[in-house]
Image 1 (cartoon, rainbow, N blue to C red):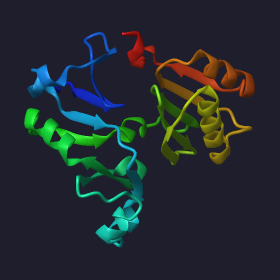
Image 2 (image 1 turned 120 degrees about the horizontal axis):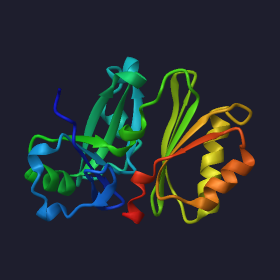
Image 3 (image 1 turned 180 degrees about the horizontal axis):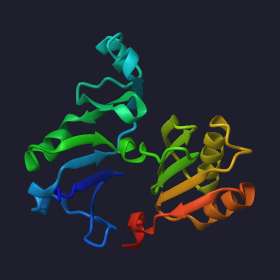
Length: 213
């Protein structure tokens, strides 16, 4: 059997690891010792874009960066994602990059959005990861990624607005779809989704609710 892939996450300015029981838990990165076991670090950052592979080589570096706040304190990374026929191009602060690589020199740095970019074929699906003030949402319709985005929010009404906007943009308002719900469990939001879209099949991944562990 191959060695199991080990990941840690940097989300809302906090490091997390996955426990032996598969639950998210906060990680004291400064005292973290199991560095040899880590393959990937998934990093939350608002500056990312998805660029189709077919046009990647036809866009200059300046064009790729023009949608970002191109600060001298950041560096840019790319990840080729064949399953969505695209690159994820994103910015990371040089300080955070140095902090991680000084501890885990050979680790793969990935954008957090990559963690919700995988889907099951032949199934209309939306994935969300809810934090305390950030939500990631991706949608997959007819075997194609149609949207992957990150939003800041203040309250449950904001969460519902962003979710329904994605449903509408993905043309799933009248279509049954599966919702994979990850992160902090918001029962008010889930109840409203069930009320507005009763045909939706909801899978809740309680092990990702880092506020309860």
